[in-house]
Length: 222
Image (cartoon, rainbow, N blue to C red; front, side):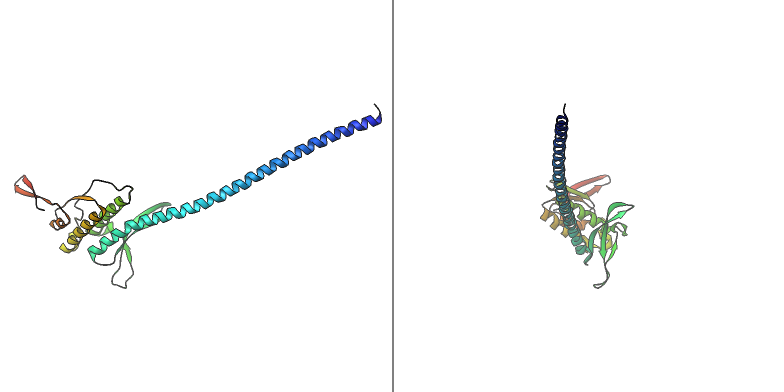
């Protein structure tokens, strides 16, 4: 083989390797473009998901605040009616030992210009505040369910300690509030009590009357 033939063969081999290199380079460039497009798409999706997370976070906080306020308001109204002042009921959200928690608080102030001070209703002597907070809280929560529960809502001695903290006036206020609340909510409320003042809350009232030792009878009085 002549020198010219050898040169042409070498050039042809180099040309073939060059074309193979160009093809490989183009393939890598195409793959790079595809990866770049995928990366941009992923970044767009991440930004979209982040935006959704922000919206959902605000929405969930808004829904929680709405739920909390719809439970706090009727309890505050009941306390104000019974104690005839401007006390408020609030849920307090905080962390305890690194875990989220919720506490019930009643805010009360001395005098019209005094600052509100918070106290735990369960720690009050006599329990009257705790009775009302628990009762109205349960009634309010039942109305936030979708759909609200049907049937009978019952309690034993719903305000057993209230009369010890203010006499008949508070008992009458409890009766009035319960009657109006269940009427507005469309509930049937059955309760048992030894407090005759709460009879005013009932549309139908039955009384257990002692006849003799170990013998009683039930009679309708309203």
